[in-house]
Image 1 (cartoon, helix red, strand yellow):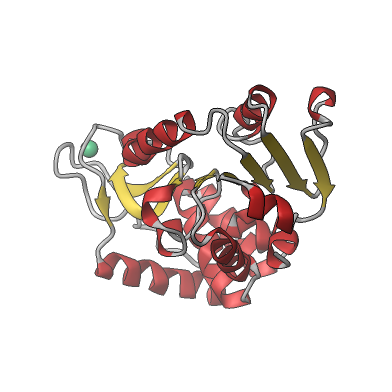
Image 2 (tube, helix red, strand yellow):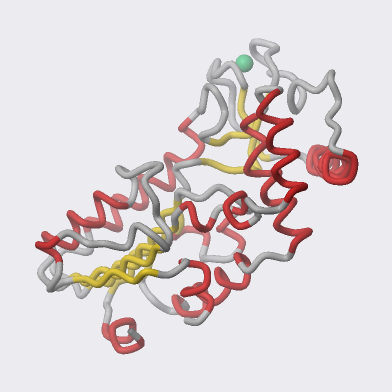
Length: 256
Ligand SMILES: [Zn+2]
């Protein structure tokens, strides 16, 4: 593995659902209680933020694993595409080299999807969520009157977090990053490309799993690592160009 990394000219990382905070804390009673309550109020767009809050309280290994990965990628020509939704990856990795098509817990959009501009959360909004999550954690309550993070300047609907769990997900929040990613991909042709697919399940197969297999098949010098607790198998035609590792991706990444 170390040798493959050292020899790679380019590294493409796919970060999957195993890196979701909500996945790491799924067995905690407080998380489940809060999740059920938010779901019953149709506030699914808050679930990744609630997961991130619980993960901070429970001190999960996700952050340390990401730091390890960032250390390994230092100085490398890499790109990271993520279907996990959590704290902004731009703070851990070089900002111009990540894309999160499933969105963010740090930006907001109109909940009705009217096309209003997507904006970063204000400090007061982070503080408000933290306060509400604290009550949700300790007392299992959520205010009846809560609809969203203020109202839309255009249609007066509630503003919600800009992620795939919003009913009317506004995808323009990641488009600039996505364009940078596709440009970067064009430069991988005929290069020694290492593909690291970490904890990617079947939630959004067209974002990472399927394209990574295609890239590994077409690029003569590519090699694919697929790390996943259960879905680690790789297709037969890639057996000479890849390896499947049956392990939790956070544990595996933490040992890099
Ligand atoms: Zn609106």
